[in-house]
Amino acid sequence: MNPLDTRKNFYYHRIKVFMGDSMIEVIGICPVCGGSFTVSELHCSKCNSSLKGEFELCEFCRLTKEQKYFVKMFLKNRGSIRDMEKELGISYPTVRNKIEEINAALGLSDGSLPSVNVSEVLQKIKNGELSVDSAVSFLTGEPGEEKI
Image (cartoon, rainbow, N blue to C red):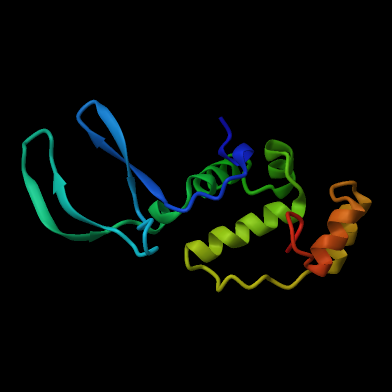
């Protein structure tokens, strides 16, 4: 199932932890206050040794399930926004917005949008890769799914 189909924005982030033969999900962000959870114990099921302390989760562990799926599809499509549009059934501006959201979540940007290359947008319209409505939304930064 494609998690993007649900169009839900998951509040908490999850990581998978193996325990024996079963796998349980562990949340990385506190659903009460939004703070970051830390791991307090690591345990080896083979030799039964444990390591106690305060361990931070990796930055990718703090992405939402939807964001992780998007990154996976982005890598599968070798970073091609055009292929991402087809794969996920979303517009060019939406793909760009999701990339920016993930960059912000990973601390790679401040969440502000990059400058727009108007000639690139016009070329995408000419090539049929972007609708005029999507381009207008992209260039004006209108709110909604097509926002920038």
